[in-house]
Length: 327
Length: 146
Image (cartoon, rainbow over all chains, first blue to last red; front, side, top):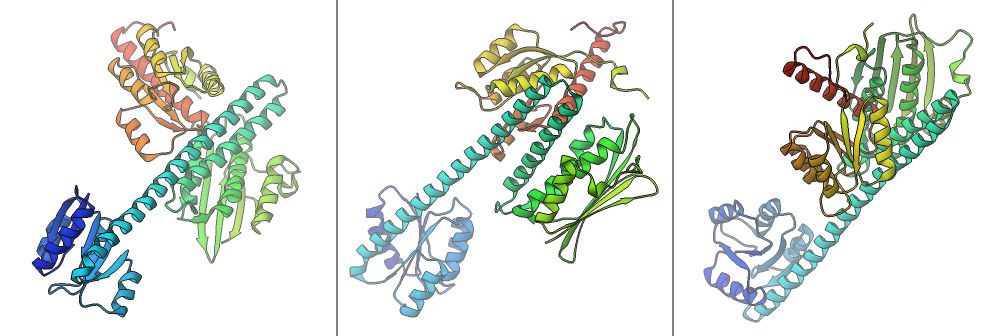
């Protein structure tokens, strides 16, 4: 453990060090008498504890705090000052100091106790956060393994079914679970676990679904950066999966080649996903928005949930589906 | 239009190292459906090492977290020493684990639940590469028997 003392006055530093060293006999103790000394020390492994005066000829305790915290955000910090008053004490604590001790011969024991309790509190917090990370990792691992087992079970069931259209339903279900899991992964990748990089998700999803065509279908992706909160990303992601799967399944029958354009735009508080193919187009007698399959039901229900709009267009060649969702 | 079947490719013997039986069965299914052969299953790193030493294995598919004291990354080192290509299929999303796994030089790292097509495509490329090197060593051979 490394303790850093910052004070202009060598005698005060010596007294403070002696008091704190009794509490932490094994600590590696460093002193910074000036700015150069401080900056040199911060290039070494950062301190775990900082004891600093407020009034320094070359700086002040708040600026020292900022430099040290930049090197080690978990460093615990105590201000030890003779020039202080209540106002400064409040300012130091508000700025993030763990404690504040007024200088004085009888205060040295208080200083040692303050450093000890600040350090113990910090350790406890660190342990809690490490535990939380471990639990999160374990949960993530379990979740993905369990989803893999679910897919394995579906596959097993699929193989026991003779009817091709029933089998196809199960294969679709596997793809939906895969899409959910890819969303989950993007969510886990995000720094704050709150938002999903939706463009990255669509890119991966389109890539892996297009792989099903064995290279016959070219992808043309134009994806603007869109970050979605999880409660939007999940329904929107499931819709994207349905629309893309639909195109790849029906637009290019009999080994036909073609292109699938996927566009994601963010404008005026809406996110718009457009999937357009140059394939066979919707059959003459089919109104896609009124179709009764599971896929279309999912698209309608999830769009309702997001208060979004879905439209289907017949192009000169192929079909276009557009989903617009308020953000 | 020519399809993949017209490409000269080897039928691979694949070792599946996975401690979750249902998942191992699923992987086996995908491997066999893609026209390859399952050389064996191992639920622990120790069993995997035995299989690598004993059987003819062209490719190993490795989970990272296994029963017993060894991990899939340990198995990867052993496979690499024997010049056997391998890929990971793991449920771990942890960056450090993934880095350690990728540092061993796998063919791929697939996240669970993995995309079947991605696995098939790794199998296809490996089989084609094996076939190319088989031809290089035996210019007249039309592919080997599995």
